[in-house]
Image (cartoon, rainbow, N blue to C red; front, top):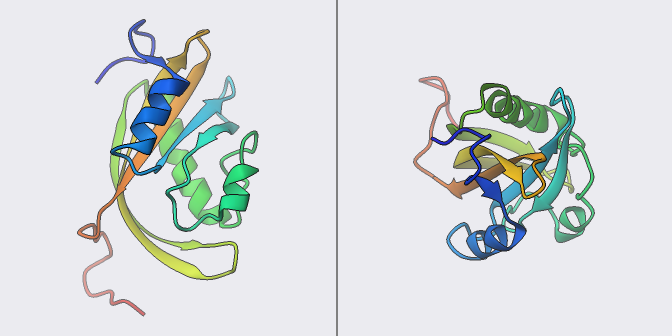
Length: 147
Protein backbone atom coordinates (compact mmCIF):
# COMPACT_ATOMS: atom_id res chain seq x y z
CA UNK A 1 0.00 0.00 0.00
CA UNK A 2 1.27 3.44 -0.83
CA UNK A 3 1.29 6.32 1.57
CA UNK A 4 -0.88 9.30 0.63
CA UNK A 5 2.10 11.65 0.56
CA UNK A 6 4.06 9.77 -2.10
CA UNK A 7 4.47 11.96 -5.16
CA UNK A 8 3.59 9.21 -7.65
CA UNK A 9 0.21 8.51 -6.02
CA UNK A 10 -1.65 11.46 -7.51
CA UNK A 11 -5.35 11.48 -8.35
CA UNK A 12 -6.20 12.21 -11.98
CA UNK A 13 -9.76 12.83 -13.16
CA UNK A 14 -8.92 11.34 -16.56
CA UNK A 15 -7.44 8.16 -15.07
CA UNK A 16 -10.42 7.94 -12.69
CA UNK A 17 -12.88 8.08 -15.62
CA UNK A 18 -11.04 5.36 -17.56
CA UNK A 19 -10.99 3.09 -14.51
CA UNK A 20 -14.59 3.81 -13.57
CA UNK A 21 -15.95 3.40 -17.09
CA UNK A 22 -14.01 0.16 -17.52
CA UNK A 23 -13.37 -2.50 -14.89
CA UNK A 24 -15.19 -0.79 -12.01
CA UNK A 25 -18.45 -0.52 -13.95
CA UNK A 26 -18.95 3.04 -12.70
CA UNK A 27 -18.81 1.98 -9.00
CA UNK A 28 -16.36 4.51 -7.59
CA UNK A 29 -16.34 7.86 -5.87
CA UNK A 30 -13.89 10.54 -4.82
CA UNK A 31 -14.18 12.54 -1.62
CA UNK A 32 -12.32 15.68 -0.53
CA UNK A 33 -11.91 15.55 3.25
CA UNK A 34 -11.83 18.71 5.33
CA UNK A 35 -8.71 19.22 7.46
CA UNK A 36 -10.18 17.19 10.32
CA UNK A 37 -12.14 14.85 7.96
CA UNK A 38 -15.41 15.79 9.64
CA UNK A 39 -16.75 16.65 6.21
CA UNK A 40 -16.16 14.33 3.28
CA UNK A 41 -17.23 16.36 0.26
CA UNK A 42 -18.23 14.38 -2.83
CA UNK A 43 -16.21 15.49 -5.87
CA UNK A 44 -16.84 12.52 -8.19
CA UNK A 45 -19.44 9.75 -8.04
CA UNK A 46 -19.83 6.98 -10.60
CA UNK A 47 -23.30 6.04 -11.82
CA UNK A 48 -22.99 2.28 -11.24
CA UNK A 49 -24.56 2.19 -7.78
CA UNK A 50 -28.09 0.82 -8.12
CA UNK A 51 -29.38 2.34 -4.86
CA UNK A 52 -28.90 5.91 -6.15
CA UNK A 53 -30.91 7.55 -8.91
CA UNK A 54 -29.13 9.31 -11.75
CA UNK A 55 -30.80 12.52 -10.61
CA UNK A 56 -29.33 12.25 -7.09
CA UNK A 57 -25.92 11.32 -8.46
CA UNK A 58 -25.96 14.30 -10.83
CA UNK A 59 -26.59 16.65 -7.90
CA UNK A 60 -24.33 14.93 -5.37
CA UNK A 61 -21.12 16.83 -6.14
CA UNK A 62 -20.37 19.21 -3.30
CA UNK A 63 -22.50 17.34 -0.77
CA UNK A 64 -21.06 15.75 2.35
CA UNK A 65 -20.97 11.93 2.08
CA UNK A 66 -23.36 11.73 5.03
CA UNK A 67 -25.98 13.90 3.26
CA UNK A 68 -27.78 10.87 1.88
CA UNK A 69 -31.28 9.57 2.46
CA UNK A 70 -29.94 6.62 4.47
CA UNK A 71 -27.92 8.52 7.06
CA UNK A 72 -27.12 5.39 9.11
CA UNK A 73 -25.55 3.64 6.10
CA UNK A 74 -23.69 6.79 5.02
CA UNK A 75 -22.38 7.36 8.53
CA UNK A 76 -20.99 3.82 8.72
CA UNK A 77 -19.30 4.26 5.35
CA UNK A 78 -17.87 7.61 6.47
CA UNK A 79 -16.15 5.88 9.40
CA UNK A 80 -14.15 3.73 6.98
CA UNK A 81 -13.16 6.75 4.88
CA UNK A 82 -12.05 8.60 8.01
CA UNK A 83 -9.95 5.62 9.11
CA UNK A 84 -8.21 5.55 5.70
CA UNK A 85 -7.55 9.27 6.00
CA UNK A 86 -6.36 9.26 9.62
CA UNK A 87 -4.08 6.26 9.16
CA UNK A 88 -2.89 7.20 5.64
CA UNK A 89 -3.58 3.61 4.66
CA UNK A 90 -5.85 1.83 2.23
CA UNK A 91 -8.91 0.16 3.70
CA UNK A 92 -10.24 -3.05 2.17
CA UNK A 93 -13.54 -4.27 3.56
CA UNK A 94 -16.55 -6.44 2.86
CA UNK A 95 -19.92 -4.74 3.21
CA UNK A 96 -23.20 -6.56 3.88
CA UNK A 97 -25.85 -3.92 4.51
CA UNK A 98 -29.37 -2.77 3.98
CA UNK A 99 -29.60 0.61 2.27
CA UNK A 100 -32.68 2.78 2.02
CA UNK A 101 -33.06 4.18 -1.51
CA UNK A 102 -34.79 7.40 -2.59
CA UNK A 103 -38.12 5.60 -3.02
CA UNK A 104 -37.95 4.35 0.56
CA UNK A 105 -37.20 0.77 -0.50
CA UNK A 106 -34.71 -1.20 1.58
CA UNK A 107 -32.03 -2.79 -0.63
CA UNK A 108 -29.72 -5.58 0.52
CA UNK A 109 -26.24 -4.81 -0.81
CA UNK A 110 -23.14 -7.00 -0.64
CA UNK A 111 -19.85 -5.78 -1.98
CA UNK A 112 -16.13 -5.44 -1.38
CA UNK A 113 -14.82 -1.88 -1.10
CA UNK A 114 -11.35 -0.39 -1.22
CA UNK A 115 -10.62 3.14 -0.03
CA UNK A 116 -7.36 4.73 -1.14
CA UNK A 117 -6.01 7.99 0.31
CA UNK A 118 -4.43 10.08 -2.44
CA UNK A 119 -3.56 13.64 -3.35
CA UNK A 120 -4.94 15.70 -6.23
CA UNK A 121 -2.50 17.22 -8.72
CA UNK A 122 -2.41 20.42 -6.63
CA UNK A 123 -1.62 18.48 -3.46
CA UNK A 124 -5.12 18.58 -1.96
CA UNK A 125 -6.06 15.36 -0.17
CA UNK A 126 -8.67 13.07 -1.71
CA UNK A 127 -10.06 9.66 -0.85
CA UNK A 128 -11.01 7.35 -3.69
CA UNK A 129 -13.44 4.57 -2.94
CA UNK A 130 -14.29 1.77 -5.34
CA UNK A 131 -16.35 -1.36 -4.94
CA UNK A 132 -17.31 -4.52 -6.72
CA UNK A 133 -20.55 -6.39 -6.17
CA UNK A 134 -19.75 -9.52 -4.19
CA UNK A 135 -22.76 -11.78 -3.47
CA UNK A 136 -20.48 -14.12 -1.52
CA UNK A 137 -20.12 -11.54 1.25
CA UNK A 138 -22.19 -12.63 4.24
CA UNK A 139 -21.12 -11.09 7.51
CA UNK A 140 -24.41 -11.48 9.32
CA UNK A 141 -24.32 -13.14 12.72
CA UNK A 142 -24.75 -16.92 12.51
CA UNK A 143 -28.39 -17.94 12.63
CA UNK A 144 -29.75 -14.63 11.27
CA UNK A 145 -31.97 -15.32 8.28
CA UNK A 146 -33.17 -13.03 5.49
CA UNK A 147 -36.55 -11.43 6.16
